Image (cartoon, rainbow over all chains, first blue to last red):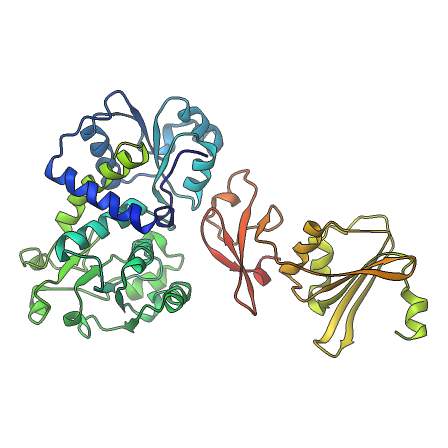
Length: 302
Length: 150
């Protein structure tokens, strides 16, 4: 395969990550870019995800390309039993790039090996969602001025939450420290802790949100996602375990920013939105510039 | 080797796989695709071993393996030794090399892995941390210990 795809955050080197973030900065300053005029890009959402799909499709439009695709698989020939391979082969004939989301883990990697055009993974089950990771990095860079040597406090579902796993992997290039705030049932899995041990990166684990709130540069909150649980009792026990409200923010670092991949439910109280620490809505907006940068980089433009 | 043992199992031509963990002998037959071959196979399980306590041994008459084929055995018996016998003599001793990739023979344990839902040949990278071997799925990126796969 000659074409470069973005399936997992490991597909980009540190230099490529920094390059994409730099390009995203240019696009934030000037959203109107039409250099992909004449290109057609497929947006294949085998499971619905309105937020991610709209962000990607807006990025395609802002770059001047056109979008074809579907937003849920019920009306496609997959529902008639067509294999993923055949669907990808067919679409591959029409387009210059494929953006796909699929509930099965590894489906995007497989698609990238079947396709001859670049494939962007917009989420494959609980596995990877690299554009989310890159927009998280962009938000960290924009708010802190650097990615180097920061302390990141990850809160909530660290067991099933793929965004925290990918962010941890991507941040490992930049000498971070981590604080993992999670109930015991949703603690960071051993394989990721071993990964940090091997890299010599420090981390602390706690079950208390208050304990290390004042010691971090980034507070990365996550939702406890009901759809990832196989045991409904486990979900009921942990779903409302952390709620951040404005009164808890008195002693935090002045540069501290709160990120959240959204949607939020109860984990961030609305009164936090008005504080200078809230950054999650801007973070979602950043997704547009980062996705524009990913698409133009993979197509060989910037 | 004492005389009695020779009477039972001396090979004229073939391959002896020694130092297989006793509990993995049946898996070894599987992984080397030995079920259903015509040659005479002698299997020993729970034999005394100074090194491992109990070991297994498999002797296959008139069968000679390619290295690639044989190295799959390293996944479940990394310390196994291989003796190639011709005319009752050991003509070659081989040690196994851990394969970098495992293609087709293992199944991913992740129920949501695409390889368990679509007609796809499985592919894993091997990770050897010194005392245990794990497989990293090329597709879903999940890591499984080999003892759970074979």
